[in-house]
Image (tube, rainbow over all chains, first blue to last red; front, side, top):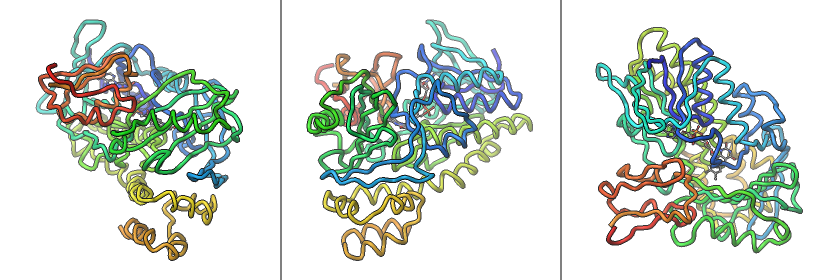
Length: 397
Length: 60
Ligand SMILES: Cc1cc2nc3c(=O)[nH]c(=O)nc-3n(C[C@H](O)[C@H](O)[C@H](O)COP(=O)(O)OP(=O)(O)OC[C@H]3O[C@@H](n4cnc5c(N)ncnc54)[C@H](O)[C@@H]3O)c2cc1C
């Protein structure tokens, strides 16, 4: 078998890359090792309106579970700050359906999909990556390709096989645990809810993302370094039992977990001769909230376009493919670097600091902070010398 | 010694694969596989696991 492009992994990143390549006339094979696209779900299913629209997607009630018009941030003692602006609008998706539709879009554009098909090795051609070894239903075969695209998520082996350092370090790798629950009550179900505090979710946060019909994703993410003595799962169970006002009548209907890479993105190169990495495989996740779909789908569009252009020119060298990496670094990459600094700043906050913020910050302030507009923070922090010190460190770099 | 996965607890999210410095862990569809020849017992997978399914065990 021979294709222009083989994409490994049919998550959001892989499906979108396959679609983009196929739309540009390439022959594309998309490999998925599991028996189902979209499952198991390792996600709270939230995506901003901006991220959704930027990916060229349209409203579809089959996979949009709930429209979201804002976010509520909760301090450790239960004070809340409401964010409600154009930027905080979004959707909670039904990812098991959403991803199948992304795969469908790739297929409609001309891509071929192979299920229960695992890429287990790389083929070499004149020193470049020239395809993959596929294992499917107990049989192995070689698939040649001009470019191999690793969209194989946090378990990425493709990058490692090509000698790219894709290893996650515990401090920049979130240990995530979640229940999808029915019966959560007393929360505004048109907003996502985030709780902060060092006894609730140290250096991370805990969330409720509503999906409509009294169903919600209730989860937690904390850095791997915080997960040793007490597990993400234990923190979440404790919170649920301590908040009967929300959970007294709720029970889980699904259990999820996963690792979230929050380094910003792989700092060393994530392309090589005949090979590109995209999505979680390249750690392209928003370091503040751990959402990966928006950034992954955006990167996938660049990745697919550059792959098509490179193949059109007959040059699939690392140098040529670097265009993808440069475009990413100059756009979302820059944003991710800022947000990574913001995350390190937030990680230093004590519960007392969270309470202070809940008292003085408005939803709009927090929105500005997320966009990297942070000058106002300094003014506010003059009263808190310790915080000012942290803030200066992250504002200056 | 090597890392072992408690299949009763594991929900095969594959998160541990991403922190293994020796590439000793693989997520098969519904099962974590540890290559005990590669494993160096660093314990990073055990530290990361959200549900406490990975641990380092003697004599495996
Ligand atoms: C608890 C939790 C909550 C989250 N919440 C959100 C959220 O609310 N919003 C958001 O945007 N993001 C969220 N994320 C992050 C988001 O889920 C990821 O960023 C996103 O799924 C990454 O997409 P991907 O396509 O890069 O990888 P994945 O979705 O992981 O897809 C990779 C695919 O590759 C397949 N694969 C792997 N190896 C091979 C191989 N060798 N051969 C063939 N196939 C292979 C896998 O089976 C998988 O289907 C969350 C993550 C976690 C863990």
